[in-house]
Image 1 (cartoon, helix red, strand yellow):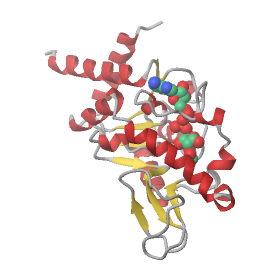
Image 2 (tube, helix red, strand yellow):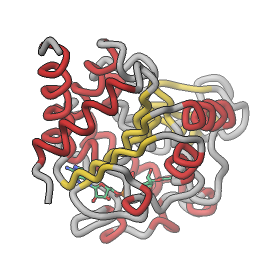
Image 3 (tube, protein in one colour):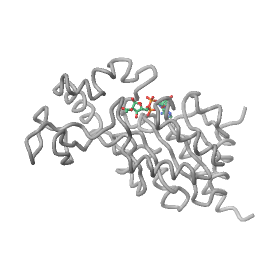
Image 4 (tube, helix red, strand yellow):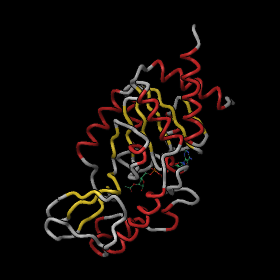
Length: 254
Ligand code: OAD
């Protein structure tokens, strides 16, 4: 079995060879080390809460207060979270011209806070809300005090500007993600269980279009079978290691 060092070196060489045509596809696992709970797995949110009661349009219609309370609780956790070494290493790869863009399923905004310039948020952003009547968008700087919050324009209910189960992904973001996946020479798949569609199509689309797949996860997932490199390690440690290898390789004259 290859060591983390060897796997990271192979990943680094693939990323260098891709000459900036590397794209990252991230999920909740990338923010786990920032203290943001993931959805699945042992301590996952969906172990304690039922998605159909909190993350569907029907749940919101039935009980907007309950849904908002759950989102406010998550906003409070996220407000305390800071980008971790995984977010920071991805932002650095972008600065080095080696990472084209990050496609994320996360709503926490931590990639942006880490300095990521090109970011596609497939499932929305928890800090944004939109009016259920006039569509007006509001950005929160802190969790709302009044629950459920109301539209400053028309007074109707605001809803979190995130994607719920049964809802389509935002059109422009999905189109952009598809294009990035098709054009990528390397796709870094980090901290996602790869079971929520359509987002989970991204690795397959990239693979079918010739990309090498590097997966970083603390366990195996349905994506592992198509991965060219599977690094079973926490995201922060693995990506920092890849970055370190990239720096070593580019410093060493051939
Ligand atoms: P999940 O919670 O389904 O999966 C998190 C993944 O991260 C798992 O595969 C873990 O093994 C892995 N993981 C945990 N800690 C890690 C670490 N430190 N380093 C690396 N990997 C780690 O989260 P997502 O795949 O993002 O959608 O879930 C997809 C969607 O399902 C979410 O966007 C959300 C959820 O329901 C909506 O709300 C629409």
